[in-house]
Each structure stands twice: as structure tokens, then as C-alpha cells.
Image 1 (tube, one colour):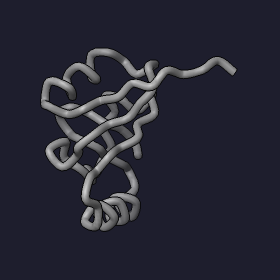
Image 2 (image 1 turned 180 degrees about the vertical axis):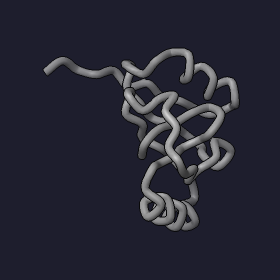
Image 3 (image 1 turned 90 degrees about the vertical axis):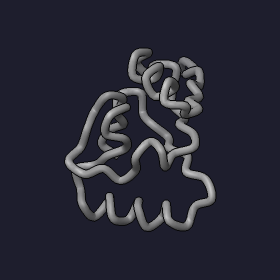
Image 4 (image 1 turned 180 degrees about the horizontal axis):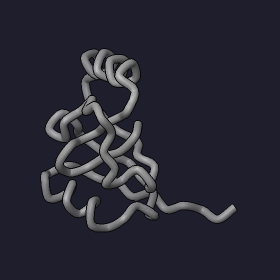
Length: 86
């Protein structure tokens, strides 16, 4: 996944990855996306999921607060999991 944006949803730059993710999503009862904290606010060329298709987002507590807040405002559950120091 290239990025997650409140405006563009979940996106990637590889059309084959997008096609594969969309095929997988068609068989899911619930779409849950795991997002690296560095991917917030980024937008790839191809959207594979609009946020209306997503039930839950899981990310680390290092995610930038503004895009997380914007996604929560849209009604999505966003869980920010604490990162443990190694």
C-alpha cells in the first residue's frame, strides 16, 4: 500500500497490486486496513478502497494526528497501537 488519505482512500502505485487487493476485498466480510504510520496522507496513482468500504484502520501511535482525526471524523474506527521500544 502506498498511502491512506481522507480524500483518496487507500491507494497504491502498482495497478497489479490494486487489482489483487480489490479482488481480495470482494471476498471479505469486513475490510480492515493496517497502515504504517509513514503512509498517512500519502496518495498513490490508483485507489483500491474508498474509506466508505473500510470498517477499521489499525496503525501505530506514531501516525500523524491530523489525518487520523480526519478519518475518524468520517466515521471510521482507527486504532492507534503503542509502539514498543526495542
